[in-house]
Structure formats: C-alpha cells, structure tokens
Image (cartoon, rainbow, N blue to C red):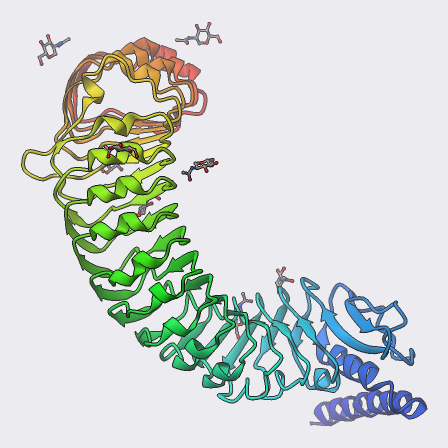
Length: 496
Ligand SMILES: *[C@@H]1O[C@H](CO)[C@@H](O)[C@H](O)[C@H]1NC(C)=O
Ligand SMILES: *[C@@H]1O[C@H](CO)[C@@H](O)[C@H](O)[C@H]1NC(C)=O
Ligand SMILES: *[C@@H]1O[C@H](CO)[C@@H](O)[C@H](O)[C@H]1NC(C)=O
Ligand SMILES: *[C@@H]1O[C@H](CO)[C@@H](O)[C@H](O)[C@H]1NC(C)=O
Ligand SMILES: *[C@@H]1O[C@H](CO)[C@@H](O)[C@H](O)[C@H]1NC(C)=O
Ligand SMILES: *[C@@H]1O[C@H](CO)[C@@H](O)[C@H](O)[C@H]1NC(C)=O
Ligand SMILES: *[C@@H]1O[C@H](CO)[C@@H](O)[C@H](O)[C@H]1NC(C)=O
Ligand SMILES: *[C@@H]1O[C@H](CO)[C@@H](O)[C@H](O)[C@H]1NC(C)=O
C-alpha cells in the first residue's frame, strides 16, 4: 500500500510540474504560443525512443524559429501550418495537444507505432487539408461525426492501422476531398453511399477490410475518379451500373470479394482504364465481346471466378495488354487467334480451366515471359506445337507451366531455344521418349518438373549444364540408370 501511494505522489508532482512549466510559457506570450503549448503537450503524451523530437524545446517562445523538426510555419502569421512526423518511431497515444494547432493544414503522423483511438475532435481543424495517420497501430471505432467539419480536407489516410467499426458516414460531407485511403484496417459495415457524392474525389482505397453489403448505386457522380479499390472485403451483389460514367478511371480493383452476376456493359466506356482486377469473386457468364473496347487495358485479371465458354476474339484489340489472367474459371474453348495482335502481352495465365484443342501458335511469340496453362483437363485436352516444332526460340520466356494436361509426344531438343527459362513444369502429362540433352542449354533454369509422364531412357549427363538448377523432379517416369555424377556441378541443387 505505501508503495502505491508514494507512486501516486510522484506522478502528481510530475503532472503538476509539467502543467506549471507549460502554463508559465503560455503566460509569457499568451497569443503566439498556443502552437508551442499544443506541440509540447502532444510530445508529452507520446514516447519518442529515438529522441527525434528533442529539438522541440518548451522554453522556446515560438515553434517557428526553424529549429523544431517536422514543423513548418506560415512565415507571415508565424503559426504552425504543417506537422510532418512520418517515420519518427513514435509510440503511445495521440493526445489532445494537437487540437491547439488551429492553423494546421497538414498533419502526417504516418509510419510510427502510435496506438489507441482518436478523439472526435481530431479532424475539426478549420484549415486541415491533409491528414495522414497511415501505418500505425491505431484502433477502435471512428465517431460517426468525425468528419463533420471537413470542408477544407483534400486527403485523408487512415490506412494500415487496426481501426474497426463502420466507416463514418460524415465522410460524405468532405466536399473538397480528393483522396481517401482507409485500406488495411478492420472496418465493417457497408461502403457509405455518401462517398459517391464527393465530386472532387479522384482516389479511393477501401481494400483489406471487412466491408460487406452491396456497392451502393450512384457512383456516376464521381466524374473525377481515377482509381478505386474495394478489394479484399466481403462485398456482395452485382457490380452496379455507373462506373462507365467515371470516364477518367484508370484503375478498378474489386478483387477478392463476393461479387456475382455479369460484368455491367457500361464498363466499356472506360477508355483510359489500364487495370481491371476482378479476381476471386463469383462473377459469371461469358466474357463480353465489348471487353475489346477497353482499349487501354494493360492488366485484366478475371482469375478465380465462374466465367465460362470462350474468350472473345475482340480481346485481340487490346494492344496494350501486358497481363491476362483467366486462371480458375470454366473456359472451355481455346484462346482466339486474334490475340497474336496483343504484341505487348508478357504474362498469360489460363490454368485451371477446361480448355481443349490446339494451343494457338502465337503463344510462343517473342515477348511472352510467363505462360501458365496447367490443369486444363477437358476431354480431348489441349495440344501444343511445343513438342513437335523444330524451332522454338522464345528468348523472353521465363516461366512455362504446362503441367496436369494431356500433352503427348516427345520433348524435342528445340527446348534449348528457351534461353531465359527459369521455371519449367511439364509434369502430369503423357510425354514420351528421352529427356533431350538440349536441356543443358537452359542456363537460367532453376526449377524443372517432368514428373508423372512416360519419359524413358537414362537421365542425360549433360543435365548438369543447367547450372542454376535448384529443384529437379523426375519421379513417376520410366527413366533408368543412375543419376549422373556430373550433377555435382549444379551447386545449388537442393531437391531431387
Ligand atoms: C514499432 O515497435 C516495434 C517494437 O515495439 C519495433 O520493432 C518497430 O521497429 C517499430 N516500428 C516503427 C515504424 O518504429
Ligand atoms: C497492435 O496493438 C495490438 C494491441 O492493441 C497488439 O496486440 C499488436 O501486436 C500490435 N501490432 C503491432 C504490429 O504492433
Ligand atoms: C493468376 O491468378 C491466380 C489466382 O488469382 C494466381 O494464383 C496467379 O499467380 C496469377 N497468375 C499470374 C501470372 O500472375
Ligand atoms: C507496348 O509497350 C511499349 C513499352 O512498354 C510501349 O512503349 C508501347 O506504347 C506499348 N504499346 C501499346 C500499344 O500499348
Ligand atoms: C490484327 O490486326 C490487324 C490490323 O489491325 C488486322 O488486320 C488483323 O485481322 C488482326 N489479326 C487478327 C488475327 O485478328
Ligand atoms: C508442377 O505442377 C504440378 C501440377 O500442377 C504441381 O503439383 C507441382 O507442384 C508443380 N511442380 C513444381 C516444382 O512447382
Ligand atoms: C522409349 O519408349 C519408346 C516407345 O515409346 C521406345 O521405342 C524406345 O525404345 C524406348 N527407349 C528406351 C531407351 O527405352
Ligand atoms: C563440371 O565442372 C567441371 C569443372 O568446373 C568441368 O570440368 C566439367 O566439364 C563440368 N561437367 C559438366 C557436365 O558440365
């Protein structure tokens, strides 16, 4: 008991001393030093293990002398207008001190270790334009009226914290806001419909939360929208009409949600859109012919949905396309020949579908780096020219996965032409004949899996020429003889 009361006395003294000293500073120059007072109180509430704020001296009668790290002032009024403490390793709680900084326009406390909640008052700065609290460990619910007086606010980021509860509906009153980033928290409830009325909005990221319900209607008012991400939530229902009216949209990411239904046709109006990410939903139907009108698409990710039948030939009109991911759907027909016009395509993933027929020859065109075609086990199966063509010289190809199909025939020595190849998986097919010695020409190859075929003969001693080899899998074939001793040369080989 006595120890506890002693402690209390000590704490009281500290508190008293602190208050007294702050009060005496304020008394010297009462009008100017609201800023000094506010910053010193803020500093007293947090921990600063690296002493980054040691330049904040409570004896200074003004924070604008130039010595206060992270503080910027308006030279005319001598008032603090910016506080930028990004990455200062600060921890502890944000107290009420900052409320005194009435002229603050920009507040960044990003990338620290701050904890606790934030009070209803923090955004009630009349002049606040930018507030960035991202990358801390702040938690708790946000008061619904947090943004009640946010008329000047342009950018708000609470990203990468542990906030929970609903997104405040008062966000809808920040009529000047250009950028909202609430990603990577635990926000729940639905996307507040009021946000769709913020006509200045260009960028919104609500990804990585627990949001549910449908995407509200009325997004067509956002004529300035450039980028929207709602990915990694539990948002359901159809994608509503209206996004097509946001004609400046460049990036749309709705991946990893529970969206269903068809793609709304007005998306075709998005002529500037370069990124359309819809992976991991329950979208269905055929991929519409109008997809070819989204001329700026560079990434089209429709993976892990329920799209079916054929890939429309209009996709060949997407000349900027770099990455097409159709993995994990129910496509049955083969890829269209028109795609030979997608000259910038570097990654193609059509694995885990039910495609059949011969793979088009453009698949081995000069710029492709990744081709993933694994597990297409429709009756008839996929066929490919790779194992019969005399010349395969796709120097750009790094990843080739043809595993788990019904490919047959021999691996020809043409494979030696794939000089950049790093990953080769031909496992679980019906390939016959020997492993060609030409494999030794693949100097970059680090993983090769030929298991589960009908390959026969002995393992060629030249295989050691593939010096980067880390993993070599040959089981479940009809190979005979010993593993060649030359393989010692593959110094980084770890799995055999
Ligand atoms: C946060 O604190 C942890 C340990 O408490 C430390 O390892 C980490 O570097 C800190 N992060 C920052 C951004 O200061
Ligand atoms: C964030 O704070 C919670 C407690 O509020 C703690 O359990 C968690 O480890 C912290 N996370 C980090 C990254 O510091
Ligand atoms: C395609 O999407 C699947 C599933 O979303 C993912 O696992 C795969 O890595 C993607 N392919 C490429 C080439 O990025
Ligand atoms: C293809 O890529 C190159 C280089 O990244 C770029 O300069 C060119 O504009 C692209 N072509 C199209 C049609 O987008
Ligand atoms: C590729 O584009 C050219 C010119 O735009 C067109 O004439 C040709 O038919 C297209 N090829 C295919 C296979 O669609
Ligand atoms: C090759 O593909 C098969 C079937 O798709 C898979 O099980 C195996 O893990 C892959 N091998 C490597 C080395 O990734
Ligand atoms: C490999 O199998 C083929 C038949 O598929 C046979 O003609 C050939 O002689 C076999 N080669 C060896 C070395 O066993
Ligand atoms: C293995 O390395 C040794 C010395 O570096 C070289 O003489 C030999 O030819 C190499 N063997 C193969 C199969 O590449």
